Every structure is written in structure tokens, then in C-alpha cells.
Image 1 (cartoon, rainbow, N blue to C red):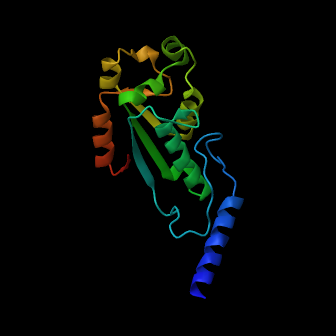
Image 2: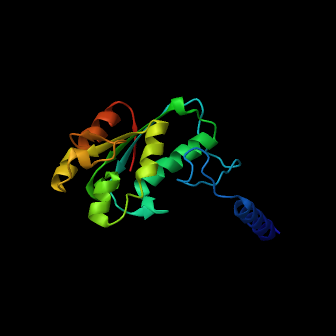
Length: 175
């Protein structure tokens, strides 16, 4: 009897999760989520969300940089849970292979024969309030000039400095 009950519960949970649609409620078109109201841990409206993201990879998710996509996903989850944007403070330290995700369209076109697929997402994240820092050490190592970078990003001395400074200010590291 116990195993039958467990099986029915599992089937019910699968059915509920399959019935939900993927959505992008805050950052439209990026960082899709499924909303689950009946789970144990949810975002806490009494907290101030201070998050610093370490973005190093050029891997993609849904055609854009996976690290930037992950930021959009966190914003969508927090927003869907009713956390107001003034309680969300996010910073990205972009370096390594991810540096190329921050190029202006013209430079990206020159290097990859296509416009930068991250341009719109960078703008949406900046409009939400995400601070997008590109490591100057990474740009120098890749012969990228400041004028080649998307205007929604800012140069920082190094990603290590961004990560250290913000963690010392109480930001949680999101690897």
C-alpha cells in the first residue's frame, strides 16, 4: 500500500510539473523558469538579495551566454515570487572566454561574422539594474579595446577585484 501511495504521489508531481509552462516574467525572452508554489524553499521577501555573478565561460543557453542567461533566470524567479527590484542588487564580473559576449555588434560582426546575440540581453539586464563589469585584464589579453565593448557594460580593473570588493560588501557569490 505504501509503495502504491508513493507511486501515485510521484505521478501527481510529474503531472503538475508537466502542466506548467516555461515563462520569462521579468526579463522577457531570457532565463525561462517554471513557477512552483508548493516547494519548501522560496525567495524570502524580507531579505535584500545582493548577488555577484562570476561569468567566465562562453557556453550558451538558448542562443546567449549562459552566465548572462542565469542572471536573467534568477531575476525571473525572484520577480515571480514577488521580490521587488529595489530589494535585488546584482553585479556580474565578466572575464575569460565570456569577455567576447560583451562586444558591440560591429566588433562581434567583424570577429564572428554575425551580430552579438547577447546585445538585447545585456540591455535588459542593465535596465533592470544589474551592474555588468568586464575585466580589463581579460580585454587586454584578447586585444579588445574599451570602445569595442557594449555600452551597457563597464570596465573594471579585474574580475578578481569586482568579486572581492562585492563579497566584502556582503554580496553572495553566484559561480
